Length: 373
Image 1: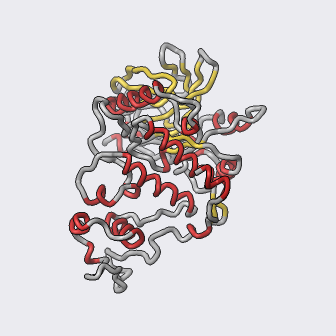
Image 2: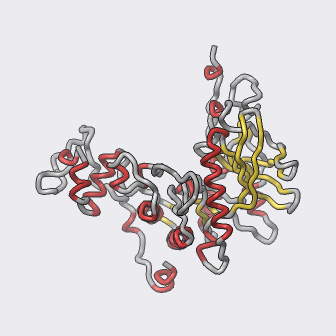
């Protein structure tokens, strides 16, 4: 009987199957890293190939985030470290955009039962914008928060580009909320220092996996707490530079890995396309739409539906790209007009409204807000 027959999926945690030689490093609350300097106190989250932990730094007596990459993903983690070092060498506090990009505090290598793991210590931040749409009340965005976060995104991405860094993968999960400190630090204590939520995974004991999984911050935070964050002049930061690069760096990413929804048409039609400032800006536009529309995606989720939505709302692609789209005739007639005879039962059906229906609830940005943008 295989181990997988015992496994109990844990909502808000990584899969226990990711813990194996070459995979994730097993972590328990109270574990220490870097010769005892960092102590794990809670779980912040996990990504495609890493776990992120809330840690206490004994040297500074402050809290931080520890990102531990899977052993087999060391090259990606080293790329992230190189990008962070590049940014740190060019850090400019006078540039407003610097406030909206996460900073690396330390990095080291940890050896464990599953291999050698690249570890990155960063500022401790809160939940991602992908965690919940609770910034929206009754389907309508909190306008002040949306305008503020949109401006921060633009400034943060501009800060990277001015320093020659292409992010490569800006989407909601890679944008984190900052946790504001009050006079008594109550927000930070309540949100970040709450007791760890341990969950039994059901797999037999093994030195390659932890005794339990820990639920991340996104999953354990109450909806009302999210709303409070969005109403308290929210500040956000761009994070996760594993798919980023700068000119001349070793081992740059070989292909755009952004989620399908955030890719421009050429990235959906061509087999391989490198991340660039242009793909970053396209993804930024999608992000701004998601914020402005109350979380609604600007395009549907299949490749053909995405392409149809782009062509219908933004105009046809270049002739070369248009000819590369094999299913265009299923959506558009010979005159390039959207077909009106599409059947909802057809696999190629395009929803009548491909853009978010709530985008018209946003008031125009003017005055001081326009200047901020």
